[in-house]
Length: 629
Image 1: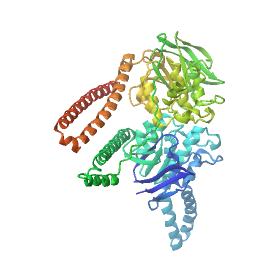
Image 2: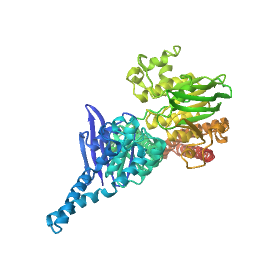
Image 3: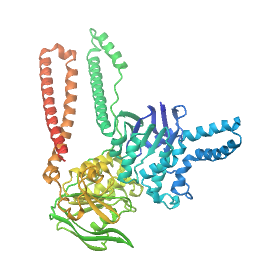
Image 4: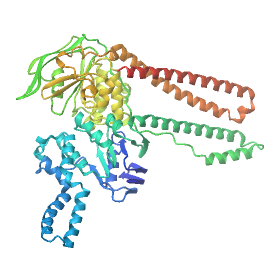
């Protein structure tokens, strides 16, 4: 066992962050830590790392275990270059090598000196323990994986971009190869190739990995266990994120059924006590039931702090089919060419992701398409009837008053109840609606903008990194809304799970060139070669699996599945209730009531079976749709 947490608790003042956490970490485990923003994920990491002291419980580490933590605010020496910074990891080894060089010269003169030979053995052990003679190979392997080619080795840390600085910090930590590797949002600022390299590296990591991430694609690829931080506790689930979701759903459902059954049993006991306590013939039995009721422990109803969003983007006006036309479009900033002359058409109902490395010009191209920036040459034309909404990376809302005012000022005819009901669908509930907009976090600002966009009812969406500040559950809600959207979507994103769910073409920008790929898999070279962008007009149209009718049917199937699942839960609770009633002595003694309850239970189970049959049929249809993508 590398880490053992026992009854661990942490408070900030009177606020309990988590309590009574009992978990262990074994070598080879890769644990993804998930939860909504503000639930305490980073606090848990910092407590494990020793930056925060626990208020309760203990943290025990395996003997000799070395811990490495990629902190959000760790610093590198700005005077060193990239390669020098990486070599600092081998400082004890380099010192041993330097001393070894001097020592070997002395041994030539005194080959039998016992003291020199002993010291030689000690230095050899230090060098071998760090695999010092393969130091340069290891450094170059990790630098290459983290997208530092040889020409960047002499680049000073002081002039690195934000993304390069983060990647170098991560590369230096990986080079240390600690027994316990702790990462907080490691995929930030990584391009697709680097993210995939990191996933492969972590999969083969011999130590343990604890990682906080909102990247579902990353968690599905890497995690072998999920820690869910919610409701002031941490619950462990086996498998990756996709495996965790149904496990949690089943656990919540089971706890709710147990709670309902306990409440029903307690109610029956209380009813028996009320009816029989005053009767002389049944007083003893009633007193016995009362003692049973007093000793009874009712299972706590499941609690959840997940404030999910539930919304759809819809539109009223159907635009012209050729919705966006780009002809010989080029973009320059100063002497730098972001986009060479480029032509393409985006049709009504199309979806297009714009991707590429940081600084390639993705956001600039989006601003040209939505009219915020003029192209250097060529033209962009929107088709008749285009009604668009824009989501920007940075949402600035100074001076806009409260959250409720952001909607009410634009739609003054809404009642307060209507505004609050609308905001509740975007997880603004209770006193949240009266927060000043200036105090909102990045994720809250994003949710507020989505609340506005839904009311704008656009038939064309321009979205720039819409998932950046969202937690993993909010990302899931947004992914569902965008998948069901029947309008036209043009989006800049690094979110691979969102790309995969949309299944749309990807326009990749790099060094001024634009290349159109039919899918993420093909962009990463795991499938056929890319389609040249100059002849990609037909490829930009939705494939047969993603036509308007197919998307509508997919949305219908998904919605009906949700409805059936809700109905199944209701009928399951009803079946449990009827089964409990059949144990009621009063009903058992009355053969007419007993027969009626048995008939009712049979009908309920029959209806439940019918729902399960519909659910299986729709699930099979959904799987066929996904296989046909």
